[in-house]
Image 1 (cartoon, rainbow, N blue to C red):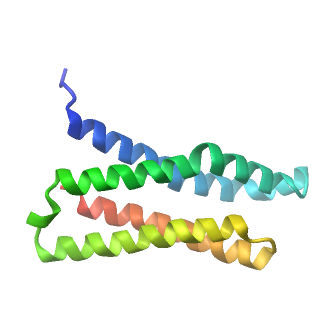
Image 2: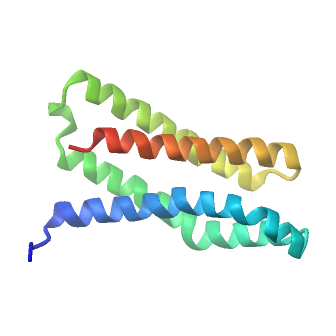
Image 3: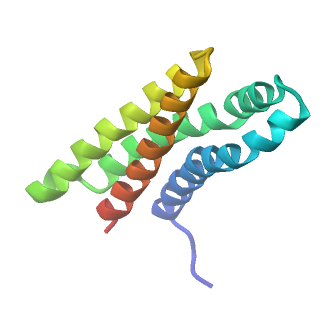
Length: 135
């Protein structure tokens, strides 16, 4: 059996947090229509519980392990295309976090839909860009 090292732990934590952040959003998007059938307040209650217990802690873990990744892979030694991709990813991550926060503060259907869609799309794009950056 292979012996794990800190690089394995770092990557595992980052991927696990991304799975929660991105996968949780996709799961909630699929659950919202059914939750509306239970009660008008159910989608908000479930989304709030998910955000507090899982999503935001996962986002913080993503940020922390993202910094750890940049230090560990010696981002300064990478070529220009890699660095540009990294900066684009960092911008997309910021959009994902800010739009998730805006979605959580929205009170009417149109802003909920717009911020929710932007959060999901930016989270998936950040995930894709992270795969591109992987060595």
